[in-house]
Length: 611
Image (cartoon, helix red, strand yellow):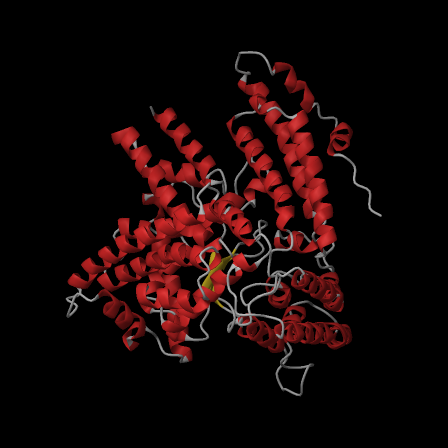
């Protein structure tokens, strides 16, 4: 049995007197700024200690942060461990509410207080729907995370790091035993992925087991190749290196292989029970679950019906803008559906699957990011220090992952930010979307926002590493439009690419509640996408299947973008000639990720300060 001590004991030990600030509760004067700074510094120690307590229970999170602590272990992913975490968070919230008064804090301290309270309350309330998730799916899950984590996160800088890598390999089977239990528990409660998911996940699992030592191939499997490459860089005696390789081979055969084989066998059994029902409505209390998901993802009180109506309105608006592009391109007629189909299928819109074209695609993405980097001073004050690289998705997972995504850098600088592009099928990524995609995933999108947040000073860790989907993805989508405002889409075809990507996010507002709230089938949603977006046919299917397994997530992008644009317009109208776009972007970026309501409050404070 593990014993957890209330957090106020921790602060008695630290000698902090946070309670003293409550003597000011009923006084009608503003605390001296030095006193506020003192109390804020004390509160930040609590916030950081709270973050560390949870983080230290999760070895994988420590590794993502570049911290080599408990480096040879995986997380405990059991539901019981999750509930233990939640109990700790409940004690943290109790301490916050009873021992720290927000009026005693400075402006940033007040934001931290509000966000910490919000996060704790969200986590505690989320216990009601603890089992309402697909723990493995075609987009996400430990079956894919384990090899990518080892290859991209677990650094080998010493002999001990190599031993820890092997230790993690030896523990994969135990980790997957927990994973299988989680899947089975959810299935028993009616939370089972739709039938289309199973072949994709099973194929992804089988791909991990390709190569030596799993078969007679001449090529090493991806994990072994990674391990050998990393230890080659260490100055080890040949006999020690050979011993490490033998241990890694043994761990792969005795732990990794049975782990994946058992997972595959479990999934094949559950596949027989699966149905084609796509929406969250099929869950027990599914409608209320989806409503809560929409609120959590958008950080608003919007209902699924409001989201759906907004989507239809935005799709119509963007269609009208694409009509203007059609005129610029002198398209032969005014049939929008025909034009969208032509752009999504015309061979000139895509590179071939040749290796030369794939490399050309990567270099082109790098070029857009480099060009934008040289223009940043025009519209930004604060810029990130962390570098970014463009990478292709690894072969073992490229068939199941999306078109493109971003992985954050290590805070200590040991790992750059990474803009991943999936090059398995070049007919899935139109060249005309690449410019907007580079801005969204790279600079000034996700990389800039996330790296700046990680590099913030005088704010607690939970804010530097925090995420709110509406803010993060809203910013990414906003930066696609920012490129237009900077006159970067010189070619109307590239500008169409930008609009086609905004159209994709607007259409999500229709299909997500359509699937999960209005009982649309997978086929209905795919048909809507094929008729109303410029996505290639295969990508329409992939997109809809992604929204099916992440209820509500797809609603966040456009809601977040619209809010940022709304707040920018609000500041412009209020300040007139005093409005400065560089200052506004600093307001958005220099407090870390925040719920949209908090972002509005920050904008209001900016307006007051300028007036």
